[in-house]
Image (cartoon, rainbow, N blue to C red; front, side, top):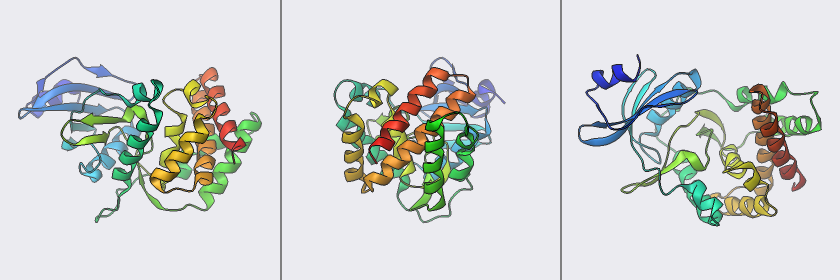
Length: 264
């Protein structure tokens, strides 16, 4: 069933134009007088993200009003202020602190069983498949293998925690949206923050050093292990870009991986 079907089924009122991405269809709507967002996933990965959103139960995340299979009706959050704009306009530290606070809301212990979600090793198969395509991929895979073989602080993860997936609620503060939904080491969730909001920004001289130190302090993480996860994750991101035929983006991600490894 598509957006229009759920609009009728759940008695929703469209409140803006539909948005279509590679993985989901979305529409701003109103439900029982509330501003909401209707999301219908078109991939298994997005459906797993729905599972995590339901499990989060609005704690550190947008509230889920309704869920049926691939469809989710969510609390609608504000697109502004935008954390990417903060970071790019000289407020990188402020944006990073908000991201760390959002991560804490996802990672806090909950008194209920975890949802059934894939583990991190499954995600890293794409990086394994790049072996033989250059030293950058070889180094990233070696680091990933080491980290995956000795996981620490394992718990449900957002899986795609970056500046665009933390939005503001005037009533409830900064909240996460659009998780991938994984089970793995807590520190992994912070790696993508350091690869965003744009590759050229991530590669600015001194930026990775400063923001990794800030994240380590704010989240109570081991900075060396955080940098190792950045090296592994950026290599994985490069592998995904290659799969999509995005060679320039792949080399940018490999440059971030190499920078992270140089700081170890």
